[in-house]
Amino acid sequence: MQYLKIFCLCIFVGFFVIMNPTTLAYGDSHQDARVLFEKAVQAITDGEYAKSIEFFNKILKEDPSNIDVLINKGAALIKLDRNDEAILNFDKILEIEPKNANALNNKGAALTKLEKYDEAIATFDQILEINHLDKSALQNRHIAFKEMDTISVKNSKYTAHVQIQVRNSDGTLISIIESDKVEYRPHVISDEFLEAYPIKEKFEINGISFETREIIISLNPETDYFVSSNKLFSEKFGYPIVVFFMLHDALAIEKGDTVEAVWTIIVNKNWK
Image (cartoon, rainbow, N blue to C red; front, side, top):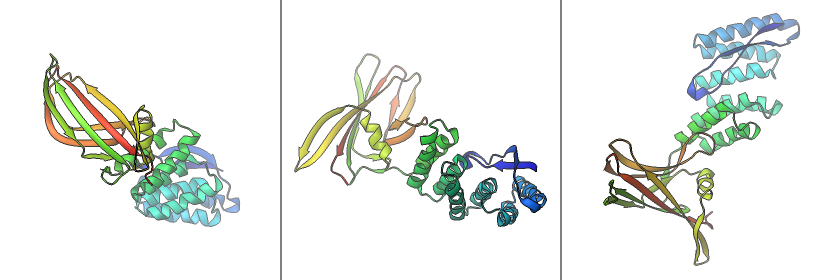
């Protein structure tokens, strides 16, 4: 029996409906199942997600392991902000197919909506271990990182200092700002970003080991503008993610000026 199925992907960038033919067997009740599925599809199209779940549940009563139905039911649950239920639904799929990208993507979406960002990112990473170019996983992973708040380096493994110098076209120093009021992304990606830069210095204080790295960011603007923050980005997974951030007093930059930000970041290697 041939009829339609839908997959609901990239929850954060839109509710996409992709229609493909499939063959699903339901024994003597296959006709009823087909009708119920078509009604569920129409309910989703009409934005009646609770109604679609009722139809999906009727199919699942006869065929509880149907992956296509479980995926769509889970996506409808997310639309209703019933995210804990959605995660349980996707976990049923992952018990059957641990590498199902649709289930992992949507589970990660539900985790992000629950503000469980570390779990969401780890879920998207499972997809990227299989296919590092998966666009949905990359985009949803990026969204999870953006939703995660940066926090102060105070009382963390990091000590940071930033000096910003502005010189005019003849090289004269016209402005300088220094600050240690830096924020960072509380995730292993911050360490991974720093490890891409050479160690400038290693030292030990009271038995505690430290490593210093220096990162220099230069800018030659093509137009006049104001700048009030300085950021370090990781592009490890294809989308720029802020890993270190400093907000400062606004600087007036003119075309022809040279801006150089020197970041000095010290990492406590014994931090737990």
